[in-house]
Image 1 (cartoon, each protein chain N blue to C red):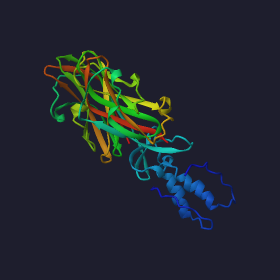
Image 2: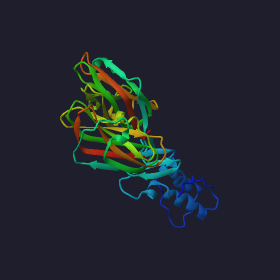
Image 3: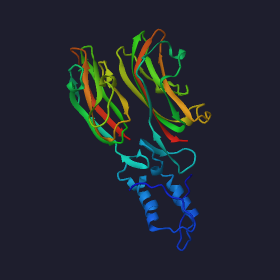
Image 4: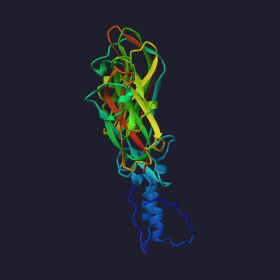
Length: 182
Length: 190
């Protein structure tokens, strides 16, 4: 139901069923208790007098993967190992991502970065968004990015991996990705 | 308008316009549906009076160019620098901050941390590195504005300026910071 701005009442005006249905029934159905359906979701604004619930998305990939591919110039060339989340949003979403990683050979850096694989949104140069390490011991490192001002819709974000530096390789473990849609 | 505890109606009670205006019109105008104004906001409990909610949206700023470069000890440079953003006064804030940083010279560590009106200046929120290759790092902090001495409620302005402090831990250390971002979600607008 859509929200209707409540009128001002005056003594002597007849109170009709239509008014009660519009200003009590329909308006209450447009508020958070009226739309709440699943525990734990956020209540967000989706326009003037429009509220909706928003569902977090979280993905975890526990296994350790070892990669030795070089960081490509184009994201499409990267290994596609996930994790990946798909979520509905109102044009703004926060991405949080981290993993444990280490370099096991060579002198390059290990990179872990999100990429929008479908749906609205655009991220800066994926290399600039990458959580990165050149350490030879495991370190949990991550980053975040806020995407805002895009078209509402359903977006899929997938984590990508890369290794900079020839003859370098590294491990990526306990890989996480969270999307908070608004 | 403010929220009024809804009255209990009794059979045969005469309904006056004043009752409907208070219990229906005014209370409806305090709901999130009435306050929703645009995409991308989230509702939090407002500050001040009870039964008040406020719409919060992320305020974000980024500084891609020019990259910041320092050769200094931390105590020598606490200037709040870009990215800078003015955020409405609120009871608390959820702050995310990130940058790519590396040490370009020297032997110390380089770091960045958020600052509010030059007052959220504590190593607790510092993100540091001694890497000589550029690494993107992030930090986040959730805090109650009233816990920052001198910030709240002493400052009565309608906005607070958020930014970043950059530094190096040893004389002669030089750091370079790039693609710097800060995002602030005010909680409980006043």
